[in-house]
Length: 177
Image (cartoon, rainbow, N blue to C red; front, side, top):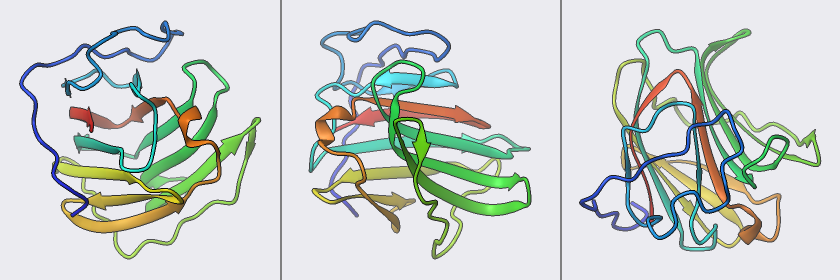
């Protein structure tokens, strides 16, 4: 829906969360997909975020999943600004089948966005997510269907240089194009 995404042949190691990895942990391999990375995952986005950049996430929520989170962050350290916080909630504190979106700047969260046309995720069911960066927003498709948009709140976009995925999910592949 948002352009062709091609498979590449060679897997790349990922940087698990839990420490502060060096800025260029895996120089020269940013264009290669990351296969079966551990969760939580924190990995640099080589070349940063810019209009036309696409991020592909293929995963399976755990059988008893409560939530999983995808963050686009500015830096690989604790307390980094979060340009897009996409929190998929199956059952969390009274929230059922909600995809919450937000951003965090300087430690302060913005206004939550919760509206969505449908809920495309199911425990133990594979999904393909494509996040396309445009000049003014992120466009998100799930299983080749347009799902959501989130207007950029952090500028400039090139400050956004890392991806985090955590929670009740098994990642099968992450790639950047």
